[in-house]
Length: 166
Ligand code: SME
Image 1 (tube, rainbow, N blue to C red):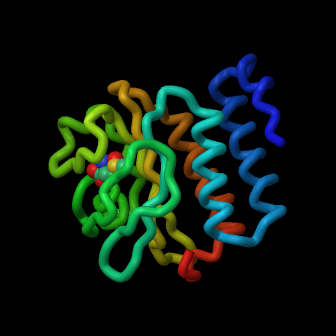
Image 2: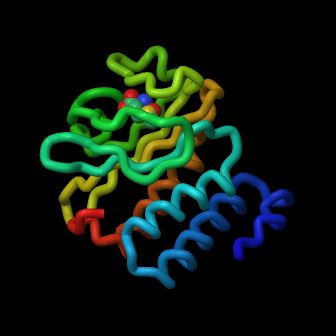
C-alpha cells in the first residue's frame, strides 16, 4: 500500500523524487503494461496537486489513441501534429504550455484545462506516444516538474514494452 502521508511535508523537488521512487517500485514488481500504465497515472494524481487530467496517448499507426488516464473522458484519437500532444510527437520535444488558450490548434478535451505539460515517449529513437498532464491553473507547470517528468518517462521506458498492444 502507498504511504502518501510523507508527501504533505515535502517541498516540490522532494515530492517529485518521491513520485519517481514510487513509480520505480511499482513497475519493478509487475510486468503487465496496462497495469503499469494505469498505476503510473494513479501515482501522478496522488503525488501532484492542481491537475485535472493525467494520462497517456499511445501511437497506433499514424495517430495517437487514448490510453490509461485519470480525469474526465477525453478525445479518443489525436492526429500527429495536432494539438499539444500531436505537436510533442511531431517535434519530439516536451511541450510546456503556460496557457493552452494561446496554443494554436490546442484540443480542448476538458474546458477546465488551462495549462499543459506533454512529454513525448521516445525509446531507442522511436516515438511511442505521450504522457499528458493538464491543469486548470494557467502557468501551473515548472521547469523542475518538466525535468522530473522526463525522468518519469525514462523509468517507464525501463519497464514498459511499448511494442506490445497494451
Ligand atoms: N489538450 C490536448 C488533448 C488531450 S486532453 O488535454 C486530455 C492537446 O491539445 O493535445
